[in-house]
Amino acid sequence: MKGVFFMDFQRAQEILNSSDTYEVFYKGKLVWIKGLKPEDNTADVEILSEKIRTSVPVEELTEGENLH
Image (cartoon, rainbow, N blue to C red; front, side):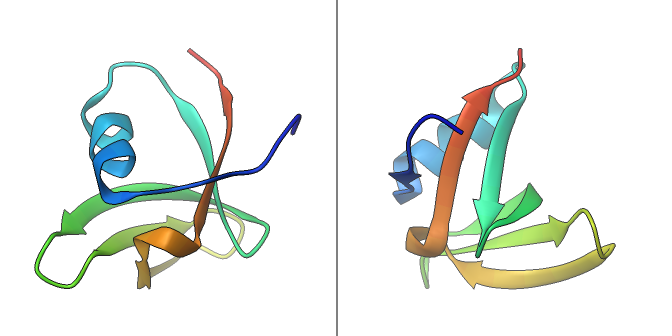
C-alpha cells in the first residue's frame, strides 16, 4: 500500500458502485463493502480473512490500490 487514504461516505459510495475493484481496509484487514447506511455513516463490510460481516464507521476505512 503506497499511502493511507481515510474514507469518507461519498468515496465509499463511489467504490461500492464502481465496476473496478479497490483494496479497502478496516484496522489493517482487507474488507469488502457490502452496503452503506447514510443515516449513521456506517458501512456493512465483510472482513475477508475471517469471513465475518459487520458494520463499521466509514471514516475508519482506508483505501489502498485500484485493482481494476
